[in-house]
Figure (cartoon, rainbow, N blue to C red):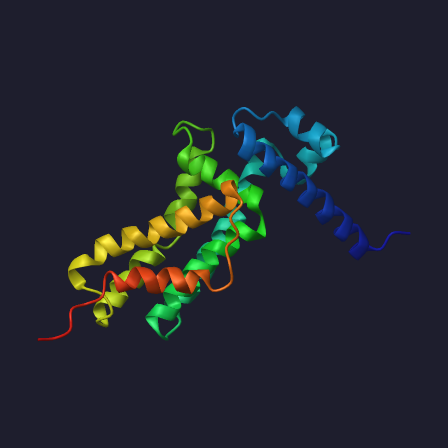
Length: 203
């Protein structure tokens, strides 16, 4: 007789396999262009199996988006809410975003395909909801850097935009160009960026 814990392990393995295959297909073909039939054939499972674990193609996509991105949001919020050096905190924010890409590159490519793909995708509403729930941590961190005198208060918006840009470009280079995100790269990026936005010394 198969134990309950073993059955749960087998169940989660099957679900993770389907999700990984779907993420790769969604990222390469697009969500709307990928049918349930394509997913189950690529995963080597039946349609009832997919429906058992996820309910529908939409449920599968939501599992790939909602749970991981809410987890990322919780991690980012914890960084913001933890007292400490604001520069170190900004480095941890960069690292958390890079870790999200490393953990499952196909899932991250799927997220980017929705962010930069057609606005009328069937998942546009779901993505908008997830984005609203994610705290704007980079903006908060940059404002805090200005408050404590690390960067020029007049350049908060420009610095926040640069932070967003650096994280996105680094992630895209990793996901689509195969350029590894090296150990310590987050800190080097933050320190190089902040040098250009330093507050002027008091006269």
